[in-house]
Image (tube, rainbow, N blue to C red; front, side):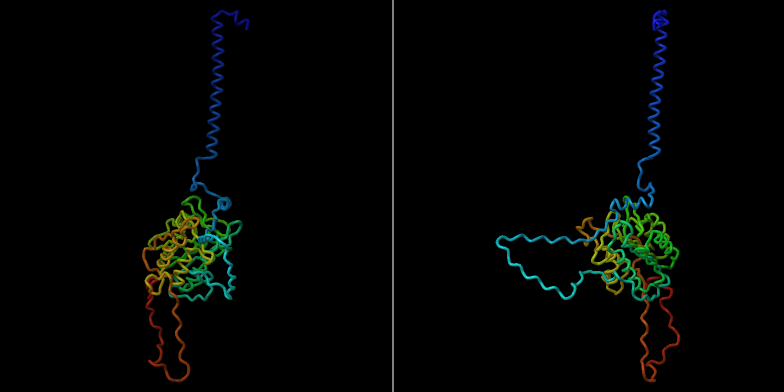
Length: 395
């Protein structure tokens, strides 16, 4: 440093300036590296995390779906609960003497009004009717779920009511795939959907019914929930069901059910849903069915309550409109708000679920050798006047 001060003034000044420039360059370079490092770190973080994800863009693994669904309480089981009667005001003065207890009735109390008749249906004899050859159905009802998923009250009862309606209207049991509880796995449900499409044709009538939990990942992203906690996205469901040929009735009894109409409803495909996409679908434990199926299929079809024109025949449209008109009032004031069924497609009115087989002819009179009045019975079968008529038209 002493030598520095002995130098001429101009050399001293040049040296000092050089030192300042050198130190400034190092500082600037260091600052640039710090900024660059921060920028690289930020870009690396963006690449790792990506932009803010949306539900539709993020595929979720089945096991993650299960955990998030149960953690979020998606397996809610809303049931209709009647409001409690208000307690009477307490009277002043001494309490009145307590009346003696009434004697217990000898028989069980009568079932509540509107109790189902088809919750155990589908077990009687199946006698194919005239439409049976061209009719195919998939009926799914899940009540006892695996794992920690809550059970439903009416999954099996809904499916049984559908089976009873098919049995009574002359379907062929071999043309119906019936999946309940343990049989209704995710793989089995997907196979059943494709099985139904493969059997549909220009002149067929197909029916698909599902009753069980529905998982929703934001409005518009709904999933059918199988017994083994696998999920079928609404777009995948629509992609398959929209390939059904001929006439088809697709019915979903569950929460947010309208969200499954992804390209399904059309003039030849009737889509019915227990609730709107932002609503829950209720169950009635006393019926062992959902409100939707209990009204439309059990009361509407099996009990004949939906016969609006009183002609002795309940059409599919009459049945679903019957349920649609009554479900909101039955669920008014409930914990999740009322449910409003949704019906779309199926532009042609008057679809019949099927026609039962004609009753057997009466036995011939016994005894005597006299021929029956009117001569001998014909030896050839009369022509069938129903041949060639569109499916579902009553002749």
